[in-house]
Each structure stands twice: as C-alpha cells, then as structure tokens.
Length: 214
Image (cartoon, rainbow, N blue to C red; front, side, top):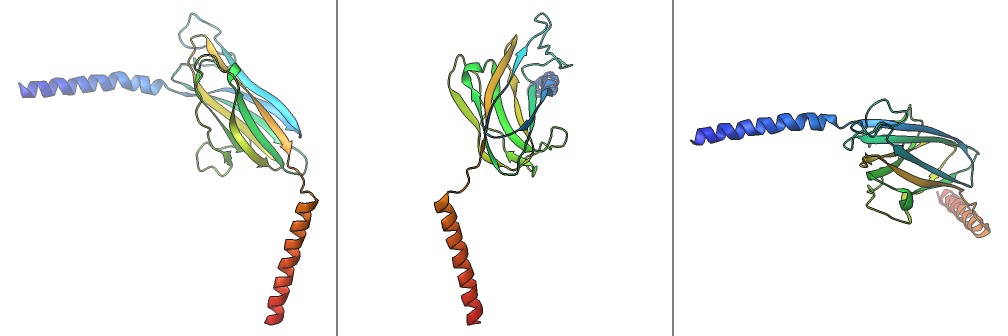
C-alpha cells in the first residue's frame, strides 16, 4: 500500500512538472519599442511612454503594432529610449512615471545605460549601467501624482539609453507615460570658486613647506 502511494505521488509530481514546464518556457523577453529621441540639450523636459493597444481582441494574447509575436501577461516587454547629450559640460537627468497615465501594467521598472540599444549589455556588472532597475510599480486602479524612477544623475556628453520593462496585464493592453528632465549642472558660484582656490593655495603651501623641510 505504501509503495503504491509513493508511485502515485511520484506520478503526480511528474505530471505537474510536465504541465508547468511549457508554462514557464512560455514567458519571453520581448522588445516592444526602440525610440531615438535624438540629441538633447539643456534645459529640457520630454515626455516618453507607450500605449499598448491590442490590434486583434479576438485572438488570445496581445497583438501589438510593430511587434511580430503575441505578447502574453507572463512576457516581459522592453522599451528602449536612446538619446545623446551634446555640448561640452555635464548635465543632470531625472525621470518620473505619471501615475495618472499608468494602466494595466505590473512590475514597471526603469534603468539608465551609457551607449546605444545595439551596444549595451544587460547584466548587472555592465560598466555602462549608470542607474540599476528602479523599484517595480504596478498599476492598481486610478492613481495620480508622479513617482521618480531615475534619481538625479550627472551625464557627460555621450550616448545613453533609458530602458523600461514590465508585464502587460490588461486583456486589451495597457499604458505608461513619464517625464524625462535634463538640466545643466550649475556652475560654482563666487564663494565656491573662492573656497576651491583657497584649498588649492593651501595645498601648494603645504607641499612647499614639506619640500623646504626636507
């Protein structure tokens, strides 16, 4: 009797694994958008976002414009926003998500890379990763206000990618939108310049004293 129960339990485990395997394998990472925002100059406030509208409500899953495969709730979408920062000085970037335009999406996260969509790596040890994935957001009914997903970060003139990912839960799609802000890094004021000059002069005097003492 005991042996029979063990065989039944083993058979049940095998059956569950066989059913779960296709479901786990079905989850894919799907690039749903690559946008080139061009060369940005400071100061600048720019809106970014994506409305995922199902083109065929009868077919299972989401049929999205420009996406050759069906997108399911278990799939993770990736949107890349490429841009360059011109000029010769540093700029400060921040990014937010507008909760009033955030619908039917789970685990929405944002990160920032140096490079282009064709050259960036995706691992956490990528030296070009400037800001790691933000805390996941899930649209739960109506909302309002903004959530900051990229904290203030200084950028030198170069190429960058703002990347967004998440899961679309709505049977007819979902949407997100946010604001990207680019501002010039303020030049040091007269007091800051005076302090910096004084520190430099003090360092020179110390080095000269050490040399004379030697």
